[in-house]
Image (tube, rainbow, N blue to C red):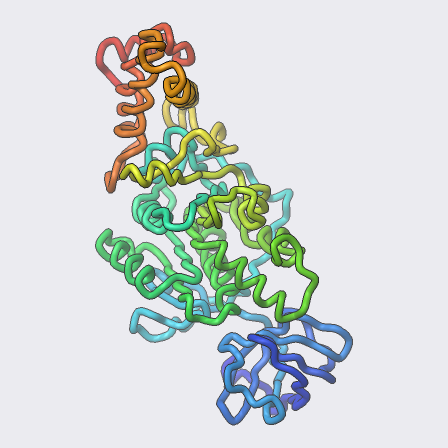
Length: 465
């Protein structure tokens, strides 16, 4: 709240009893509300924060700037009787902001526009409508085999050291809704990234010319963990404004949700809460749902929010609590392969464990092409058989395989080298389909039992479409 908006008299409390990490514990506070913003004045300056816990006349406050050097006996806490709000409007397009909505692009702070709560407005479940349109990312393993649908939340599970950041940047620069008359916007939120990663993202977006068509939030690893919790909510508040007020199709990329949950665990430990699995708070599932469930479309509005959260798997463990709970809330997963990455394949998407649960809603006649599902199923089945035969070959040797089985081995190799591996290429869905059909041409025609006859005929004639 700006000084001009503050009441002439504000009730202050000089009853800070303890400081733990980013938290202040204050006693004697009357009529405090959860999520209410506060101002803390001390000899060190002015800090802002948010009430995190209220118990009778006792409350815990998380400070956005951190508590380093704060003098508790000489600090005064003022309640602002408001929640965290940010100004939203078209003036945000092309802006780069941090986790406290401060500019990082050297431009003045965003002013004007409509003030909006970062918690968003609750959506009536009966007003939600199902995802129904294909979102093209330019990546074959997603577009053809694990299709992203407008309004879906589809996470990418990545091991440490895998190029998830590069894939996130590529999706953010290439994504589009083919044939849609809606304006398209990317909201990109990076949490807990290094200075080098932040520079990489900005260089990629600048070179691709997408800065003017997006809103970008960067929370650095050196920033307060409290800011890390605010970053995705600010990004989603901006996305909701553009989607449900201005009718944009908005793609929200959140990286890395593991860093968000680590900040959640740090603050939970400071509050001395009972830890859950691996020390994460027991309410992490419901907290994550308040982020992921802000994707979707609503009746009466033509805009939408589609989410791609990036989640690092410690030790490549898909049972890790953050990964596990995210999988429950979201609608599928794209899994990255360490083996493919070591072999120089990019993007190193492991096709077999990947899944888009809403794929059928966005593909087929009138949406992509009639045999989209059949082609994806044929590629899945053929690749799975090829990988099984690779393991069998280690036992019986190549001479122990039949000619057809050797064809499947050739297919699996070519599929990885030509279809999965595409480097920086931005492939259209038509190009992905053509490459997929060319890979399948290595197999005998009677093995392609999932494809309709007309597709087999086109393949025989050397045509992909």
